[in-house]
Image (cartoon, rainbow, N blue to C red):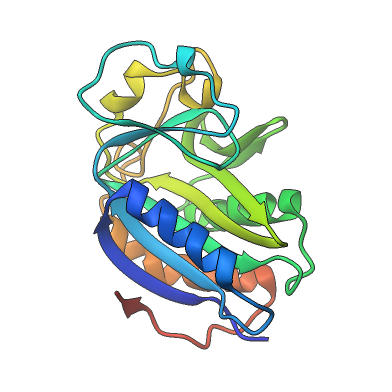
Length: 212
């Protein structure tokens, strides 16, 4: 089985990427490639399918966009690495909960390489370090295929999260690799994360990172 094709897309508009993911998923078939899209967004708040706008606590100049992923409200922007997983779950014998767990474990594996213990929380998807949230996850499954994925705070300005209850949790503190003493940038992590995800999926890493 071929591994997902990893692509670095750079800075992308959220609404445009959302439509591209929907379009690819709508038209793909059993032979279509799986992809990992690595990218950053311009500053934006997004609400999940059942997201409650009341979790936006103050006024922001940044747009608020209704998405079709699971979960509540979150922020995306510069310094946050988005890993969008356009995967046929049937091909990998995965359900949506297993896919979420796989993405969480990928981030936990990454943090272990830096000597930092990261964990998950029962009933609160994502990855945490010392009770602070490092990565947020949300997926959409259509016709057995997943899109959206997980966002990892690398060197993001965490003050953007002060205007929301992140993921719908009042008082939840966020953290980043930079805050944890790891000084890097989003693109530098892409090849490692692609490898770690393939390991979790039991697949060979037979694709080099493409730049799109």
